[in-house]
Image (cartoon, rainbow, N blue to C red; front, side, top):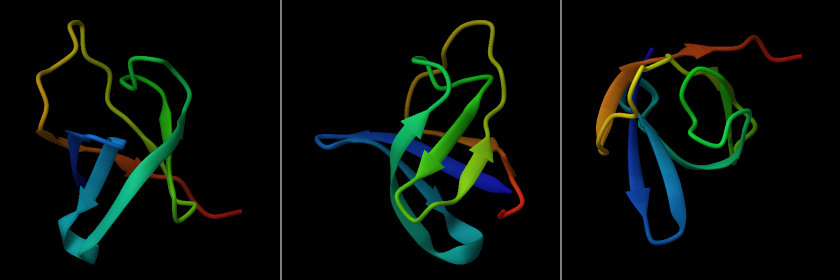
Length: 69
């Protein structure tokens, strides 16, 4: 699903327009975010796309939501 990532004074924030959901990224697999997973404050986990060079924020990406366990 489409996820917009942006930098805020509190840290990275994700916005999922389809769900009208705005949550902070509270944990991530890789320090640069891209190419690993990112966990939102509501518990959702997304697999983030990989980039050769980190993109400028804000950016909208196609991220895959992991199934809830």
